[in-house]
Image 1 (tube, rainbow, N blue to C red):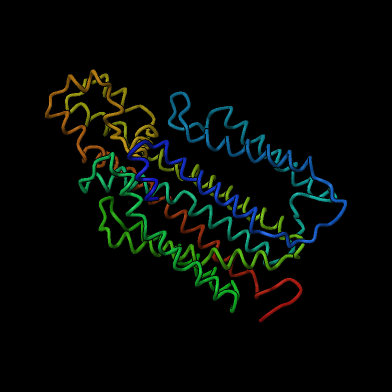
Image 2: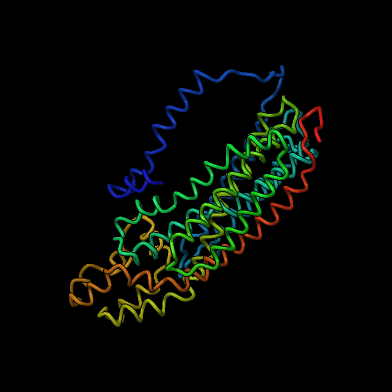
Length: 396
């Protein structure tokens, strides 16, 4: 996050290059160091039809969700767009077809029969709910920091990507500290206690965030981030270990792929869901407040009304990328015609944060409550996974 903030200060597009050297190094290391341990069964057939329906179904479904958070016509969201509705429905039909295919082919891409294993099913359900609850978390917290808290504390919008990464480090520290510890302990005592406790800690962290105002006290915020990181670290390693140890050795490759697919898909759905909630909240409350604020500071009525009815996603992404949203929304000729005093207010560090803080926080609190509820359900699923099981044997 910190490296991304440094690169964003130069050019935000450079952020996407961070993964390139890591990916190259990881590929070389994996190719030279990893050795095949699985027993390859002969005469297996590739599940072409399953591959095709799954890839198309999941891609089309997630594309529908992605375009659903973009404006459409006069609406701030795209959920009424026929193409979005069609993509989601088509994706669901293709994924349903995929499930039918997997139940009727000899060598399925997804081994759905593995869900008969209680620990496998419970672990994947818990992992899916965990990713669904926290997948959009970092995105929402960064917008909170960059769009409201950091400017209110004197940071320029251009500096916020770097400092948001720095102020988010308690989340990473908690995960790094707790991950290895929970992995070691779960190997000795089983996954159920640690993964369930991790989900409950995350639930408490989300509930704690609902108590914070927009301009919060950072030490308390850091403690809550650390709690969320610890809860995530406490959950992740034991949950993954229990899933992988509960299946036959020859199915661990497909089991790992299924686990990763569920969690990555849940993360993308989470971002779409949470961003939609925040956008809807802003769209209902922001236009009148924004128009009044602009007109009060010298923006002509017609221009102010037009800006106020722009989709709030433009302002959110402007803040996310390190731009002053107001400076991006007001046309340059209009901005130049405004008096220097009013221009200083509009382009200052407090106008935009004070403008969006109330509707943004109302929506963000709703997101945190949803995340807390998902974590609670995930904790119940984790608790129901049963005793520690290694395929072929049971340990109490």
